[in-house]
Length: 234
Length: 260
Image (cartoon, rainbow over all chains, first blue to last red; front, side):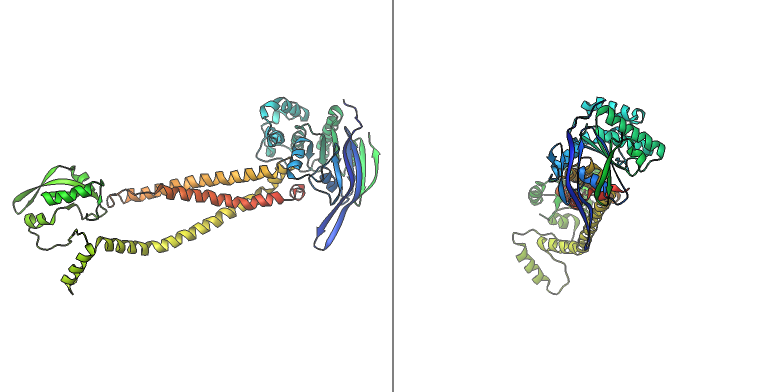
């Protein structure tokens, strides 16, 4: 078990996000600033339309803010061009989506190793890591199955393994239990909590489930695009 | 000489001198195949109880089935008593001058007289009249297939855009995506080109095999035409990859991957 290092893993400064539709402009995020320390497990909660997923996409570099900045380990990623941003996604960030987003025609092993492949790494050098991660997520006996042959919970575990294979600085998760039944959802949350506790993995998760948020160490509440407070969870 | 398609190039000159020297005969390739006669063999031709020995001096390719042998006109008259020609082939240094003389000689009497040059022009005109609509059709088919290929690639992209977004969300860069898409376009174009060239070749060969007894010549195929067609297929596929490449570079990742 690793202790918190109290170094800032991620910082968002005055993040604003507007969406334009015809002549109408909707401000979804209205100047959000937050810090996440290394080894923290942070949940972002809020009602539908509060901007929590938009905030997560901006913090993870999948989307860009209209104004404001995002720093990962002190580096401003807001101005990154495609090549740098892609490298950041491959090497320093892991992302778990609500709908898993696994490549349908690749098997479990191939899906997990994909970020390394995109990064030009030699797969042979990562056999140990693959075995370890398969054991961690409990999919050793399913390694040759394609996503279609797996249950929702198993697919989400593959997505978590894929996000962790590069040993990322931050793991982002967008409603990781949103598409699962409560029992499987609890299993996934236990897995994320274990990864955070045992490996000191920084996790930032968006959820609307207060049950899921109990696994995190801090809960940030969002309402109408603004931070409305936070609380320590465990 | 005779504008014949000789089996070997040097046969033309040899035949000309041999025709001046004595009884010589040129045989069609199909006739030689059928009878087993070879060049330099002596064969006997009989007429009215007389036998005449002719030396085979060469062979020629012919699609016509009623042209088996050619002998000098002098011996055609002397040995076989010919008094009129169905076809007179005449060699001259200035064929056009001779043709003017011949036409003056015939006057209003119906006849068919052509220099080799005129004959070839006539033949090409006839073939051209036949090929022109086919050529237009070829361009039309090419246009249709180009539209088809590009349309297929676009549909392929639309179906794959979510997968592309998934790849990009875990670190696929635009440069890597361009490489993959172009490689995909090139390889599918190459596979299509190989299949198309192979099928075309087999089709042409099949036509000649089916029509074999009537067409004794083998088709003379131009390698550059096949290679050009193959290269065009690859180029069209690469062209079709441009729009998917541009679209995937500009795609909004969140919109593509957020909902299933």
